[in-house]
Length: 481
Image 1 (cartoon, rainbow, N blue to C red):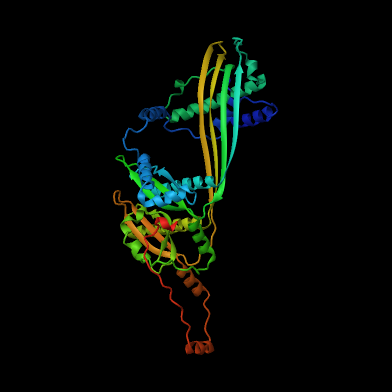
Image 2 (tube, rainbow, N blue to C red):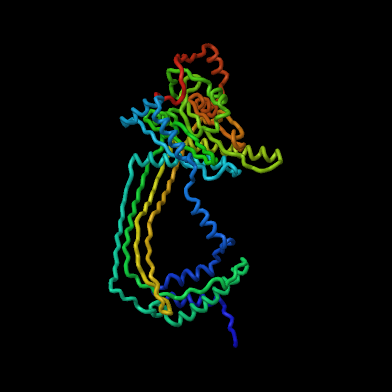
């Protein structure tokens, strides 16, 4: 018996060229070609996949009585009901301000060396979710599409197997058989490399399907929101943990016209903002004395500085997760983490001052009930009943901001170990103030003074009147909004 060697690639080229003339190609033919000849990787642990899946499914929902996300949500609800912000709740009820919140779980455990980075990203995710809800309040476009499909063949007749129903001409069927043989040979070699006996897998018979009943419903909802994020800031953040060391970050956000006016003043006043009728505490002292708890602070806040001027501070943090015993390299990685923290703080400022967002959501629900019969070449008939549920959701958010800020500087830089898990966290607190902007503009626009101007100026120097301020302030109190 003479065996002819088949050139797989050449056979495919000829086959695809010929078959392109056919208007309808069976789905399984395309799948076979793509799977075998487009270098799709084979699972290296395929024998364990079903076993691992069974373990996951049998585990079910955690029986821990302290659900970490519910812990954070309960704490947020308690905070929103507290007397300290009853004034804000009254304003929200009148439609004068906006209050909202969102929660995101940290996806990895603290044994992961990048846990502290995931922690920061969890806050960012929660804040983005809160932003999406905020812009949806400003206006949302909703589109709906529902398809109800019903087919019934109540004749009770199941046709016998007929190769012609496969819709492939005989000459192409021969080519397909050769491709199948070539594919099986290649797959057998791959299975042998993985230590799997190819004989354990039997070739499936060709089947002919006859649908008797199909009753399906598919309901799609498309939503789109476009809005401004200017003036939206985090009022308070929360972090919860349970006995399994699962962590979640929650953030309460707030928006008010008074805060939005402050963003306008920062961008357009050129630092000419009058102080409030209050004297504040030194921002450096206020921040530095809370060094041990700064890892709990994210995002921007409006505060009052020691001279009574409104100021903007932004908390940024990142983690140094480098693994090295070299002290010099460790310091380099820490410096890089600090730069990342500064970028995160600046990003929050840009979003607060000039941010906008686009939020798209596509939701699909429905179900399908189908009865069909498969008949193979031996005329074996198998009844198949399918009951499927459709449940899918796709979301996409795009945030943008572009802003020019004068006088933005570092207020405080810190490094600490997480108090429980010892991850190194690096932070930078950025600050903008009217005085800082005026000072930066004066440095930028410096001009030399001539001798004549010096003589004239030395005769009588103009004095700047002092602004009297009284009172005190604890930043981010309800009256600030």
